[in-house]
Image (cartoon, rainbow, N blue to C red; front, side, top):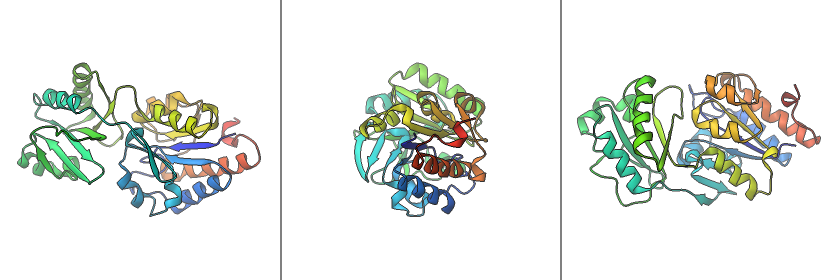
Length: 281
């Protein structure tokens, strides 16, 4: 039976056009929880974004994998944190100094501050939307201050984004670089070897569960560690080709609330001591 649901948010549980989890989807989560199934958003977003995405529904956010699993919350409490190394981020910034279309952004989730490293003010203003619209300002160097969330904003298309990522991967082996969304080539930065999959397994084991009791949903590249680590992996109909290929099971699109339908299915099936119907085909 499924005892833990891990779901990506944007373009998976929530459609990117609205970025909110529908009342129907929240009802599905409540039903799963009532059946004894744990639910956790597994997202690249910071915790501060989740409250408005779930319309202040605290029950849906008791357990969370935020910032690609670098922050893990259980019963509303932070139980595990995996920060990024400041020196590794400084190396990343030095590599980006040779480029005029990609910048390191530091996101201090505890205070809501976001800083682009060595980005000129006029550049930030020129490309504020959609690349830098949430950035507080610029700093000359990565501070000696713990940071969990960071990314590279690439002003261009995915071809350019993949070029930038290739250079970074070669120069910064202590870090991993993934694309979290389908709309823009922003590159999320993770500690090497830690991702949504590792965090999901850590959470499952901390709850006394085995990997085959976990069901995960995703759509994009940063979901691949989930989709490849857990046998009961599910891609939505709008997933990228690589995510769809990695998943064992496939359902409808995010804008059709297909994940909510699947969660309702899990709630009913787990209460009956069975596997969900969409996993029996």
